[in-house]
Length: 149
Image 1 (tube, one colour):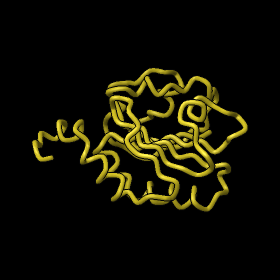
Image 2 (cartoon, rainbow, N blue to C red; image 1 turned 90 degrees about the vertical axis):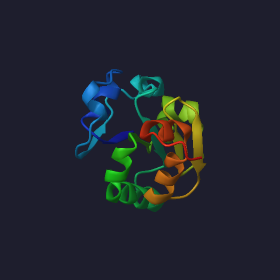
Image 3 (cartoon, rainbow, N blue to C red; image 1 turned 60 degrees about the horizontal axis):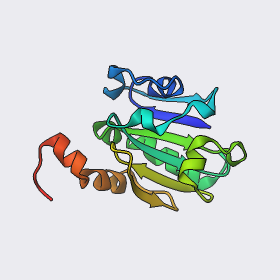
């Protein structure tokens, strides 16, 4: 299981179930292999970030590689929207993300800051589509002060 964050060391803080205040700021992309995958708890991200969970049956899945490349290319847009990218490429481990979100093969799950699943996608999705979805959320409109529906 791997975690990618477009921000400051959030992946490490998720593993310890604490979210530092600086985690919401922007920075470089990092990737960390989880030492304790059972320590992952989406509730640690409530009201802090929007998790985008990328599932695949293997890190060698071409759809997974394509999706990660698209996310890296568009990391600046994701940072602006407090999106945290979590990935799980080990179905045999049956980690908490898989138990909670129940993916089948490759898939994306976008979760809002309040913990509701906003969107599920069975194929790679562009950052433009993802940010468009985030921008239409009431929580995002409130963040940017827009009353536009």
